[in-house]
Length: 234
Ligand code: DC
Image (tube, rainbow, N blue to C red; front, side):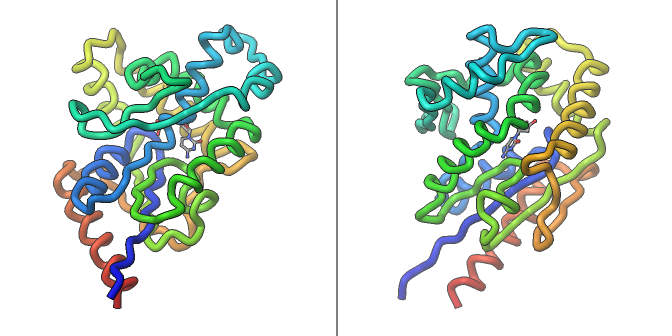
């Protein structure tokens, strides 16, 4: 009997621990993990480096013109234990995690041409199933037929606290208020944009993890994944 793999879509607000849980889950199931937020961040970093995004201006037209020449790929990194993102053969995994990129990324993610390019690539990466993909529109747009859809939420304060701690640990110079503002600004932009706004898919299972630690969250998601895999294989 063939053993069928499934597609697992994990969507939700920023800093809900989606990627931590998605990475753990992919490892446990021997599935491929795809961090779609990293792809939007990579395009944002490119636009910043080219000077297309400045404090008050955004040269959307030039960015759109350059899109066909931008090549994104993920290459597994032994040390990290997951795949790092490359933009035109340069490893930019660290550069895309700064608060500056976080502050601009929602504007880039609102551009339909950007979404079209990235969604097509994401769908291709999931063609053979056996993927855990995290983002904002995975269960609604990228894989509307995913066998398991999870929607993660937590209070803005809790999410800001987590992100603040993470950034401090990496030695970044940030204050809590600034991080909280970024979290709430992005929530607003991500849920109100015209193209593929962040919404819970009708058939997604919602998990509010405000009061949960990573282990509890992982166990819950693993249990859901196993049940979904069993359903497909019976
Ligand atoms: O998951 P993240 O914080 O790294 O995502 C960065 C931004 O990219 C987020 O503010 C919204 C956007 N995004 C998106 O619009 N669609 C996705 N599938 C993933 C991320």
